[in-house]
Length: 380
Length: 115
Image (cartoon, rainbow over all chains, first blue to last red; front, top):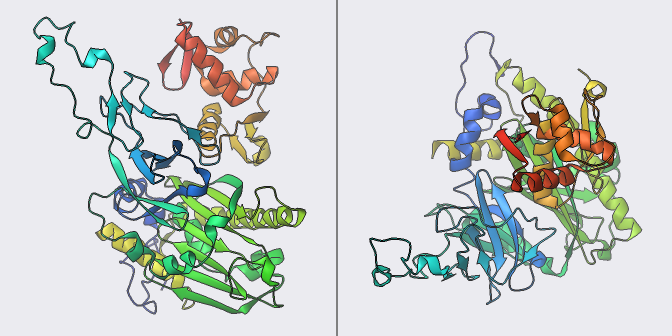
């Protein structure tokens, strides 16, 4: 039963059973600024979140920054070829060290240096050197130089953030003791993606859009295609929606779309004769297309409770796109714009305060999983 | 207010992402977010008529002096500098340079004034 806010503001937790009448996340979790503050810790600091694509930083010293909530990390390739992540915070007095550097325009540095007092770190995060003023006490009349003990490179290094990968896709976890490994959180998604030659494809396009709705509103829209017939006329051409399948796993769900006509093998990266759209909790998607030899990812990045950035990346065999690939990306952009209109309209409704708790349909089981995961995270 | 009535409109020329705002500093915030994930700059498409004259030759201090009473929003400085064809990023860089020479200061967040 839909619960309006007209009488009593009575809502309940998302029911485990989708057939119950309280099967949706209460509306306040989409609109309350305090919920976004809670999500920074309970969602984005506990689960594995996508950092970026390691193909973009092939050489030692290559790096980009990634901001998740209030936290920013430097994602860098070290001298051993490993990709590591460190808080973009100097161990001296907490200064932010490097400027914002997007994955699409990475930087390169031999060492990580804080511009404030020139504390310098190796690419493994160890403190490499400090200026003489930290090794001598010449300005302090109460100390002799011999009183200065020096700084242990390991003990005074950068704070590392846990990373793990699925193929070339690098993920972060900010928790001291993550409740799940990346393998546990990704489950079958990891196996499925690792069977594909994702690393052979190059980053070709990034589009970033700001959308006026809560990030979960877009996440929910991505997770079902009941709205497609009415709203994505170009997209559904050639797709058999009635033969599509929705697969639900612990922390990800997959929308499988079958094409009406068999797609040529060279037009897709995967074997199945279908497109696969994976949503990976909390805010990442991997889009395996049936009609393009490439793949895409979305980062559904919250700005605050009422806005998010959709960071759409496209990977193809070559970064210079063919005309057909350009057209494919254009169609994908059109699909996004159509969805933005839908989710912004939905959010206007949610923000009115009229709805206390909505009602999911029996075929919105992917969305139910999404809402359940949010509820579990809030209660953890 | 419809989209056509919104006074400030800016756009990323590289990927055509557009933003509309009633407060020019919202465009500055948009630029910072967009630049952080793409490296792209942002150009102004529409600004309301200015209440002061902008000098013909680029001069950030003169714009701040003309607009600031007692201070002026960074976004308003950038909107005015668009008359010289400057992007948001170019304006912020110019303001940064002037602050580092002591000519400008920031009496409150994202507002500047002459020293």
